[in-house]
Length: 145
Ligand code: AMP
Ligand code: ZN
Image 1 (tube, rainbow, N blue to C red):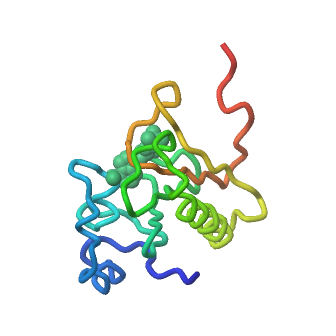
Image 2: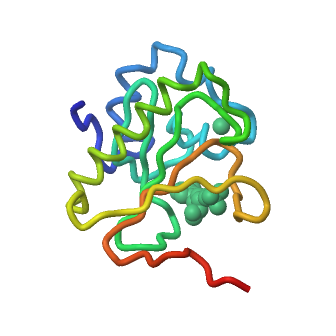
C-alpha cells in the first residue's frame, strides 16, 4: 500500500481532492470529531489514508510516535463492531504495522491499543487505535491499586 498523503491538511489534502466526487463527506456523522478529520473538515496531520483507513498524529502525543488509526466509516467503538467490520479491522492492523515500519519503530517495537468505555478513558466515540512507540512502554500500563 503506498503512502498517499503525509501531513496533509484540509487545504493540501490531495487524496481528498481526488476523491471529493465520492461519498467522503456523506460519511460524516454529525458532531463526530474523527469523522470530520477523515473528511478533511477539521485539519490534522495525516500520516496515511486510503478509501477505508485514515491515520493521523495524535494532538496530545504520549510517546515520540503517537498515531491514531480510524476506519473512515463511523463505528462508535470496539463494543459496537460487527462481523462485517472484519475487513476494515484487518486493514487498520496491516496499515499500522506498515506505518510503524515507515516511522522507524518496526524493530524497536510499539504498542497498539484501543480504549473502550469509562475505565479506559475513551474520550472520542469513533473507533480508533493508538500506535505508540519511540520509548519503552512498560507493562502493566498502570500500577495496580
Ligand atoms: P481516547 O482517549 O482513546 O478516546 O483517544 C482520543 C485521542 O484523540 C486522544 O489521545 C487525544 O489526544 C486525541 N485527539 C483529540 N482531538 C484530536 C485532534 N483534533 N487531532 C488529533 N488527535 C486528537
Ligand atoms: Zn465518526
